[in-house]
Length: 132
Image (cartoon, rainbow, N blue to C red; front, side, top):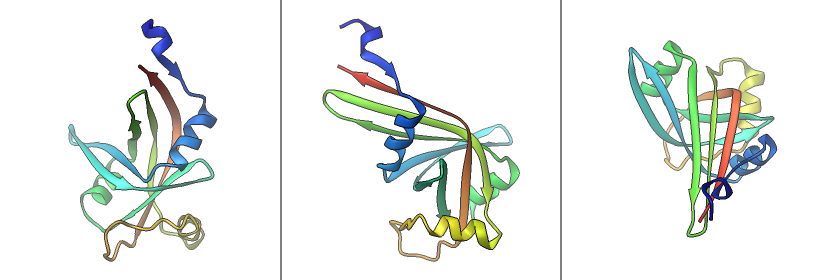
């Protein structure tokens, strides 16, 4: 099979459908020239990505540099998917934004006091499907 037949782009609708079915993604940030990647669970709503966390490195980095990347993939024996979202991360502070985030019903894998919500508003969403 030709490489051009093995890799096909996904439409934006397909990307959002894929994102809505996945529980874990990776947040990419960069502060002071140092890249960081954080695995986290997330939810989608209205073509935004939401996650909640405790104050710490992720929150500090988003506060310093709001430009982020977010990636989700899935690999199987015959087909693989990769979706990358580039956008702006915002720490949610007003009640309406927090209510919208809570309405996603995101449940953390860790039982702790995660009380800081972050929304990623995309500027670009791309995806591709790879077939063997």
